[in-house]
Image (cartoon, rainbow over all chains, first blue to last red; front, side, top):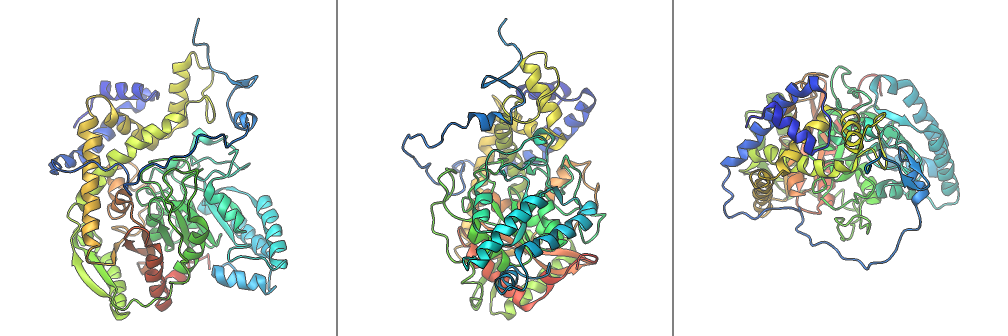
Length: 95
Length: 484
């Protein structure tokens, strides 16, 4: 499976991740090689096989809907890049 | 002092031969002298270590000491540590001071251990050589031109260089066992769900598992005892009793059935490594074990399956790094999309980006069935191979890695070659099984790891099997020149 430059740019956009223009050719090659490796899966017959999403086939536990944490806003916002009055600051999104 | 086992150190401290503060100072001095070249620790915490050691000494004096009280260790920098930088080896978290402790950290603190600092690692645990770390590679104490393995390379090198008694690691595709093998130490990846993942920065959530990295199986049993067990804060943590791992270390191996998967001894295995593994298996026969040839026919599917499942889960997990709530933010974003894109583009390194891109692609509209669903099915085939094998054998043995430690820079240009290095370790993660790597006869002065894979929740058996070999041999006691 071979990707081209525009494929990689499209995937990078989906991932909301900027790629350095000078590195894109290397990503094209590396990702194509990784997909070649992955293509080996096609040869496996999985017609009657169920997908496995969890190693222990466990059901998710349920818990009662109770508040267990106190107010951690200050502690958690202390590691934020930019806050003001308890809010996270980002560039203006609505004109 | 740095060559003693955890049990010996505990006994010596309780007998008053030395205090935890003296022991901790000894390791801090070794770190100051030896870590510069190795780069095994990226955030040493000597002040905190001494404070914890003083607290441990008070517990010892009061007669309340447990088996780990006052024991100095290192935490892989993937575990959140309250008030201490937790970088995960990434520029993205270079300024992140965790507001809370991971369950593993909390439990080891409660057990009275002393944390010497945070260990280097591949960025977000993505790598097999510790070369993807934002803080530079770790060097292998056995040959400083070689890699220590990864992603838990810092913990492995720290234990091998005796600058810590033990370390914590995490294993998503071999990240405890492979560096343990390349650095000549003992590393255990428990059953998926055995140890809580709360506060352990997520890479691939259906594969990640934390475990101990130590000099011996005996030490690993003591560390796992403190780490394992149910935690309501991790919804995938197994609600299963934790057996006494130290109690069964000396059980007889008479009649133990060892399966040797022929796929693990194929053409890709270095012949000298194969000879070393054969030698260890010969010793198990002398200990009364029976060896059976088995087949894990879908072994070749493990690496390609992993490189769909792990990147898919990684692309989803790492979407939380958006430059808004915590972590790196780019300078002067012109709008929100620019903020996301440049923060992620500048904060993540090349290997993390490759995996996010592969995962994003595999999960994108039109490709989901061909990649992710297909890989979940081949994952089932791999898991079924083990299920069949464990109907006839007690444990499976083989090499941990195809070769000894490779040179720094040797495989960084070709991701796929790097990925194939994990060919023998990845399947256990996909199936969720426990595995341990222990040192056997070195090759040309470089460590070799024997891997032992067990059925679900048989960590006690793996530690028993590992310990019996270590009771007969001294490979696990050998120390790299300059670090004895």
